[in-house]
Length: 259
Length: 117
Image (cartoon, rainbow over all chains, first blue to last red; front, side):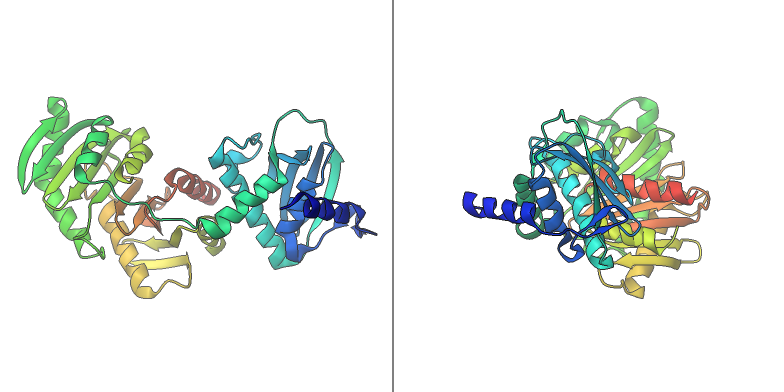
């Protein structure tokens, strides 16, 4: 956006005549909810708390210095981790979550056709994100970068990464155990799974999954070994890794499976 | 829990294309949500996968303890199966694209389960 059109937009917003009020709240154009919210951020010089309301949905933003400092409340709650957390342009995942919260509220406002805002003055401390930076992020997310499915790592890469996290493991190649890792009782437990359950499990899910031949398949069973210890099975054609890991590492192991 | 809870998750996570709530012992899907209405065949398949991974009460398919959650990831999908805390034969299932933010998804799912219990 050029400086001139930026300025014109701000002046137009500041000069917008005769705002309508409803129960002390300013009525906004619900059809362009996202634009309107971004404009409110972009024109707020002084610190303020803005409470946007659309029927039963609520979005409260702390803004000032033409920046979104943080989302202080959202109802219904989504992405709770970002609520009440000061935003900074350096933390991209928080920005992405904040975008989602704002977009989901704006979508609701658009659907219900109702949007009002109440402003309360506020003293500011944190740095925050500018409305235009935020608008760019949202645009990028919406149009230029739709979710792209992750690609898998190959078996060797997964094995190398999983080694750092598992407690015990048995590696099988073409039906033969090629290596074991871990203490006696843990490996014995895995051997029992290998001899008594693995084939039936694989057969059971193979008929149900669409693509059993292309790439690998990782199955994780939370607390399947005992409380706090989970079981994992990674299968790549001839290679199988049966392993035991701390249940708290489940998400990390899932991430190691993809690039 | 109601259909809106599942709708909300599918709406929040664009990479999650189907959410379903089913009884694994009778293979009946009670509720579902998805990008477009998921067909019966796909829902039956997801329910059968949930049963294969979580197992019916007392019969864990892998390991000795019944898992409250199982994840199956491959090149095409990530399936998340979550057993209902009070009804061990019932499960919530989510079919997502590989790379879905599992941490955020599970937070949303746990919020739904907490509200339901």
